[in-house]
Image 1: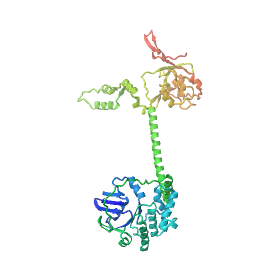
Image 2: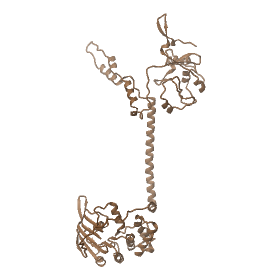
Image 3: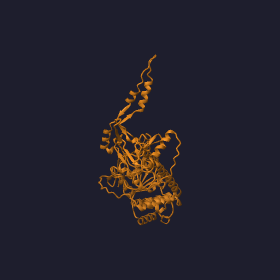
Image 4: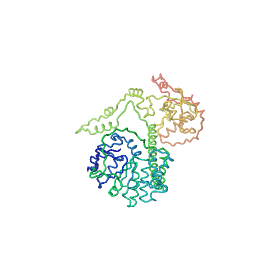
Length: 531
């Protein structure tokens, strides 16, 4: 039994409030044919939708078999619609690309029933409406009356206790309408049928109860049901709508293949969009990686340098400009204190505290810093024996030019032959061993070349494979603007010869010798000689 108690429903559209149902109460028997009559806008369809669970009431209560629906959740309404109620619509609502049999099977498919059982139940429902022999047809191959009978078969296939029909004869001729009404009356013998119609003649001829609505209220009921006592029911979930994966995939594939052209165009357009997004992301990632690489290489070549003493060039320029603006009057001259301004712009950095902080907090910078190198204003003094058995200072540059190649001018800067080795682990990531092994002791050197089979002439001079005086003379001629005529043939050396080279690191004070005649310390590196 179905009960509606004081149901109210209103719609708000653009600030306008429309009352669809106004305090409607109605009791419906389990087996009867109820026709709901009323003018357009009286609330007939709203009442039907609330009974079927397609719409929710604002206030009141809908009681199903003694159970209130006030606390119904979505899954409870799904269970109610799928197992208790069948719907027949004026516009049939059949799926055009599926056969009559597939349309009737649809409700069973959602219910999770097996394919064999679905087919058996659907054919039985079509047989009841006289369309079993036309189960293979598509809806567009049938008349309006036949399509409405298919809709009735679909509503009856899961054997609902309630059948709701919204204007089932509204789009049919008189003869076909009679056929549909005869079918609905037959169905009403063992279940509740609620029909909304504008045709009072059909209602009076077929329905055993007529309910009239006007302005959202019941104005007449030809066969009301009075309930003296109510017995509370027990709520039961009749099951949930479900569909196995194979059935879901089959329906989806069938829908896609029905509109092949549209499916292809949609897939093609989607592919273009996906490919376009992928290309944009790829280009963006590539450019970002390239920029990161350039930044990293730039920082390797031009690292951030912090000196113990720094001079603010901008402050020096501004100070000098301010000094120029100060002028004496008459025959007087005012002093321009450039030295004072220059010294004021020099600041001292506490590098010891800074390095102590970095050593204590490596987690704050290790992801953004590739390497930290400490250097001191002390240059090691390195000697070797060159190709002419001459003792040559190769680092740093000597005043006589013997070590001039150790810091050759290059583009306004200089290129040092010797430099402090970076951390072993980072060096292993930056370079590949071509011959020999990684340095393991303090007195071992590593030679870095751009190509494993090429070496620059500058390195050959630095390593003593050529006459160091020859390079010194070349550099002197270059500075004096003289014509340089020395052209040597390319030399070839082996890795074993390179590994056999030895260098002497001396204390800078060892270069000086006490001259008793003049009582001064004399720099012995200024004298050329052989050993």
